[in-house]
Length: 503
Image 1 (cartoon, rainbow, N blue to C red):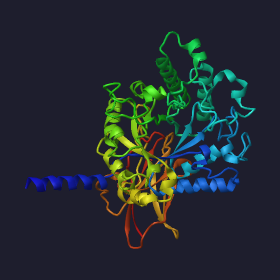
Image 2: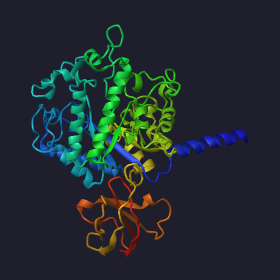
Image 3: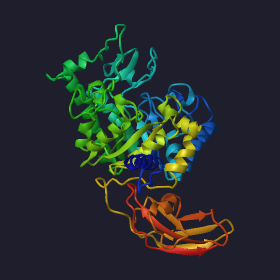
Image 4: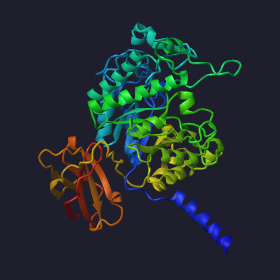
């Protein structure tokens, strides 16, 4: 009997991993990389119409999977995908030529199309990288050419020097100018602060050549501590500038998945990763969380449940402990790009099991996926599995109560009318309301019983009008509608009115 119970328990655990319940709120995002034309545009020199259509296809795919956010790379190599902030040259990844005007404002288009679908748009910046490949020249008209003291060459690539206060301030100001000039929902960075180390012919780490700035600004600190302080100052200063410009714009960072192994620090994770944020990239993620300099963190836990040196569940639990009692939302970065590669990732439920594992813990508030091309191509049925097993319904993103907790006022005069095309819903807003969008709930059960999020029909951005045409209806059915207002940081107003309509 004990043996039977044990195996029955294992079965139930496996079942719950694969068929976990959707939470009431969840961040569901995807990274879209522009560097080296990884995701968009598919190649350099496409026409404007082709570029736009590729982006629209990406958004439609994201929306169809019931995701709610896109994290789009807009400054991959000290260049730009935006017209209104012109301190650096246009990116060659758009047109094939550094500095060439693409003929439109890509970032304006990105945001507008994302918001039409009520997807959050997070602008992704690389802070220090100037060139991507070895021996790649800096463009002659680049500000880095005019300020060579800002630049360090490492492994035949060029970087802004994180230890140079002027270079650091320049990057901060570029990002904040984008915040001021564009209606973005978030500022995002990944794991590239100080560059990943390279090895020489003897397999020894080549030191990052920052002797000059260390002598100028080190002030007796150990070099590693000074480098970490430089990264800390950048994160803190940028955070303050973003919040001063637009308090509701969220600031998030996606670091490498391991802060420190516990053989170096007993408070680190039970891992033996070859790189660490603290010692390798000089990024003290713990300090950022404890000081609440960021609104969300997305550790790149790009490993599986069976990799002992960096085990998925071990790391998720470690990061959960880090964000407890902080004003920082925790989302997990998943390695969609690994699907159908190694043995573990040839299991089509690996990623699904990771998402369901996250949902066991209230402090994990969502997921972000890298390797969107694998999702688009439905590698190992990932697209089908996401939609059928974990992302069955639309869902609102998490709130950020440290930014704001005041919900907008309820709507007024909700009406429904039968038209040839479907059921047209209209409503009014109270005076001086600050709704950013509206959630439309629909049910065939007047009680709307259970988790409310499962009744979300769609969300509608306020700027596109206070109406919605429901075309997905069946004759003879009775529908119940409710509408609620939601602000920019996803505080939801009361759901007061409903309309009953038989079609």
